[in-house]
Image (cartoon, rainbow, N blue to C red; front, side, top):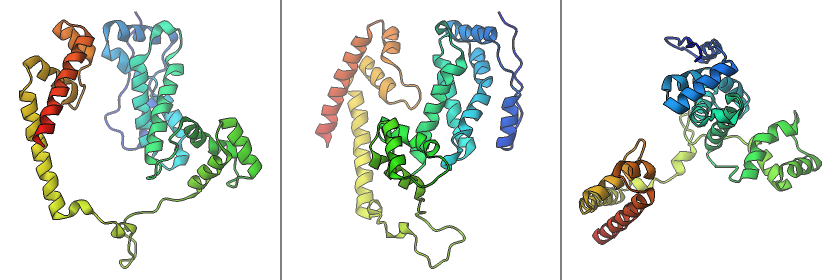
Length: 284
């Protein structure tokens, strides 16, 4: 077994620069150390081993996140999302594959950052297909320093990425376009009318509010009644599968607990849900 590694954790991090300095102080793992920690995690579910694997690769997340600063999102937020990807990679890392964690983790880190950028870069969602996502994350580098694309440039990019030429021009226009603030800022003219003033909020109409509250009450009462109609096992399965916010139980976990197959748990769940839907529909 390898020697236990010492990972200094600062008491407080005032800004992103201090965070970067802190993670760069974490020691890099040798092949043998990484392999030992990975086996400890896989065989014994050793959470301290997982912690050391994560901490030793935080500098990788910082490096990857820095490549996505051109999208106007905060570096700290990009790092945070990348860290989620790193933790997912550590959880799924298999030492039997014979590859270093860095090679495995970088794909998970990029995936989380990509997803975050696509959700937050614009209010109007873009890049909804795999080819468009590839275009979104490669257009900046492929077009070079020039902000203007010629027909020939666009055709070349489209051919390399497997998209239509018009999609390249459309993505370029979206990059060039700016976001419009819905509300006025603190320094704006008081007489300026923000776009949000022209949007009607139908949900705020009194009768709509009362109707929504009544519908929620009926559904809440109906759900409790529908759950009460189930036997103890069925009710417990439904509650643990659908009515918990954190870590809902899997079919295999419940199967092991009740001593039956996962397929049997699925059948019980399906029958219970069907019965509940019938009761809720009858109460409407």
